Image (cartoon, rainbow, N blue to C red):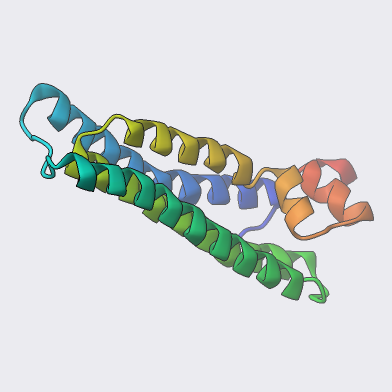
Length: 165
């Protein structure tokens, strides 16, 4: 990702994150809408299977997010010796995107669970994933925390480059 200023970096980063998260949100809303108007019915009607899916899908999401966050944390740690803030920020995008892709795929998994069972608990699970997105959203503070920035670099990122103008 090419950027000439920190403001442009965050602008491009936010736009790409929003586009990627729009896909699972659109899929979930479409599934919810079609179930609501009765155009689709739940594919699985057996209560025992629905209960199993209600338990397994969130557990799979938690496991996958945990693994991805551990991998991403180790990759962020590998970025520490990079000499340039620009290089670290460029690599931040690709590493942080892994975290977002995992969240988006788990969100689509919840939409699939809703389509399969028609159970409204998947709406709660999906909402929890969206709240998790708020936690991992790459704000300047989050980026400086992930990259373990200190001193002038931290001030530069938090102010999006305005601190040294």
